[in-house]
Length: 253
Length: 121
Image 1 (cartoon, one colour):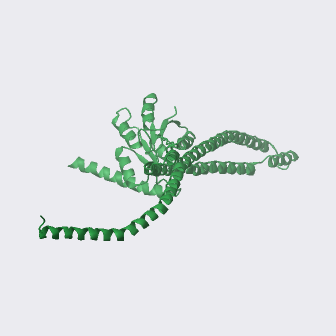
Image 2 (cartoon, one colour):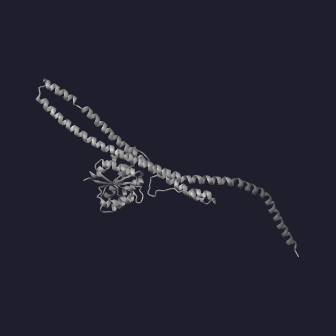
Image 3 (spheres, chains in turn blue, purple):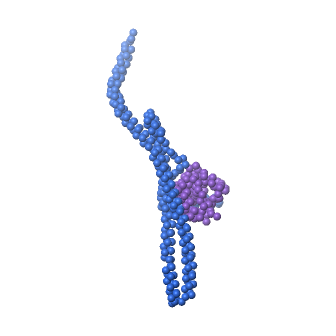
């Protein structure tokens, strides 16, 4: 037979159950709105996943295009340098020819001088030969040609200096490709967790072709100013001074 | 007889620039695309001076300089670093490894000719 104490415990439990039902009544609308929210948000999340997958799948194409650009500019730069090399070599040849002309000119001047010495200054022959000598005098033209040749030489020098921009941009582009590869790797592993075969395929189908034999300085910059080299020279000088002082100290210790 | 200069750089354009600047001065220039190839090339020819980049695959410039300095046969060969790295840390490390000069990219061809002449003329 049940005691009053047992009955009291049963009522307590029933009250607890009543509280639970009351709580359930309050929580059910919340759960319902949560389900409705999930119903709305899931397609959105899927769309986000698809967008990420799309972007991720485009990354290898972008990286490979950057690599192609680097190769193309490298080829073009080498071709330009070959041409500059040819121009320089031609200039050396032209300079050699020019020197021979000048040597001949000098010999000719000596001969004219000897001829003038044998003639009377007032004679008709002297005047005629002097006229021929004046017509034959191309010193002004020679000076012009020489300065033009020097200008071409200086310009080829400037071209070689400016073309170094290719090396710097190649390093910067390699840094960008490296970055894309890293982001691609992260996104691919993130999207890989999604149980959506179509999205998975989009990403895993494409790979970034990374040239293992490429090293780069991500901070490389095209700076032709002399200050940069001057700063380097100062650091080198300081270090050399420090090293020689250490050697002196060692010698006398 | 022409003096021989070895340029180690992974950039074909830089190898070409250096070669262009120095062959004009009457030097023979041989090139390697990284430190490893430079080390392989050294026994094949008597090299009078080495110009090296620092950022290179397989064997970088720092390791190349160290290897050269450790080898008695090439211990005295002048080495010029030619790099786009211009931080004091890299410069000090490069010079500590045993380089003689440090040039920064982009370089002035006249400056590289001057540095080479300093050691070879």
